[in-house]
Length: 98
Image (cartoon, rainbow, N blue to C red; front, side, top):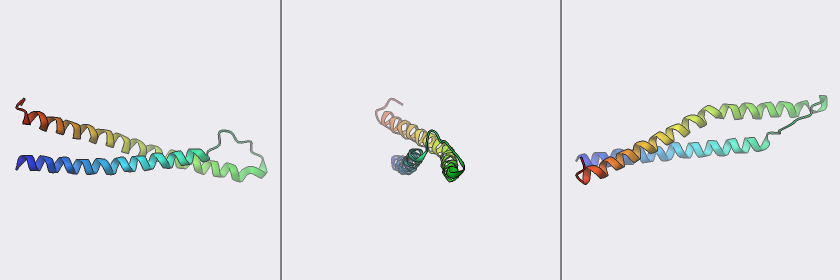
């Protein structure tokens, strides 16, 4: 029963890791698409003020993605380490090291 419970927890962690990692990858793709639209340099006169407003919106969107990217990236890494640790623990426990 204990092995079944551990396998169930490991399976749920793998599913959770997959979801978090998928969200992380989607956020990375979104940021990449936004940075492609961002200009490195703008020479603005009165006629190009709308371009400056568009660039400010793009920069704000990129900035808004920073925290979710960091959170999902760290969460994905931590979950992967926990899963690897549990898998190693179960493997070593089964081979009578513990």
